[in-house]
Image 1 (tube, rainbow over the protein chains, first blue to last red):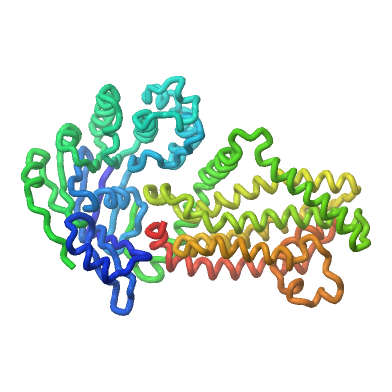
Image 2 (tube, chains in turn red, orange):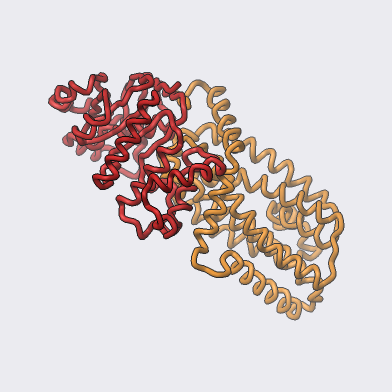
Length: 255
Length: 271
């Protein structure tokens, strides 16, 4: 059974190769992005606070939408849920197989064919070669790319690449699906298909976490929403109350 | 999937061991990525990786015949010596050269999946082992031509390859860890390797006077090459070389493990 448990998660990024003092002064005046902090006294290397004390939990059937300005920590949170980052404070626990669609180009070799790239992506997503071969036909069919699968994907449009990536990632039989909003690059026809696929995933008691700036995309796919500001998460509210979240003023970062 | 903040030194050790165990379980992924690397690098080329084999064959012929004439040595003596030396040296130096990029080149993957870091060290080693397999053709040809039959030495040579690879493993893990933060490291390594290549008895034979020089007696690269060259050409068990390589691998891995446990959390942020 899929669950997500995030407790007091804080994540700091070291900033390399920047003058910490002037950077800090400058960043104070900017409304987007994480906030800066100083590592213990004596260290000159500044830290970017990407996530600060984020806590929430999701249960099967939850479809969480993440909203927030650019640089507010949505993608960082998604990557943390994918297991890419080790927390500086707190913990993340995800049960169930995870599929992440964060980067269209993950494991993608532009000069390799569509079929080869399905294999690459599948492997990175945690499928065995055998599983990939058995799903190949279904993935190829769902992507709707037909004969294009046999040509190098450098000749694909970004929408076609999105189809390939989405078809592969959602075939992983994942219980937890993490998505950044790029899925919007597909055409209307594909978006309808993708929507059906996502709905059926969620109906099978799976969890979806989707970061997006598009209120209507979130309304159609999610049933809960959470807002991020400078790495700080709001409480999770019902999707019907999204406007309320959107109207809140942006909190200034605390240094 | 569980990720948590630092929980004491022992906790970090446990997680580090977990990374290695997971990497081992996921070796098929490393294998597939490595073969894909080779296919991708030589896409559109008819001979593909065999090109390096051909280049190396030409170099071996050139050095073997030319140097034999220059220094009044027998071609039958020098050429096989140079052949094994260069083939194995190229495995060592290519692995070390590419090792620094192991994490950097996998940046996009590491930033959005839970794949463990050591997996990408394995990918680099497997890729270079596959290249080494191509070059073995040269050795077979040379040994047939000069009628050298190593007998059991063949098995000892494999032991030499294994021990050398174990050493390369910790070396490139260290290199990959430091290169992620300090991007000069791969450049420094490639400059140093060029230097080491000329200083080490790869294509020249150490004279008796040189045997005691640290270039020969304390040169791990020389031990590595000899651990394969001696058994292949003389059929002998290279006791001294293996006795050096095994403790070196052990010590190297212990040190590298501590370094890994200390900085593994930060690596993804540097990419």
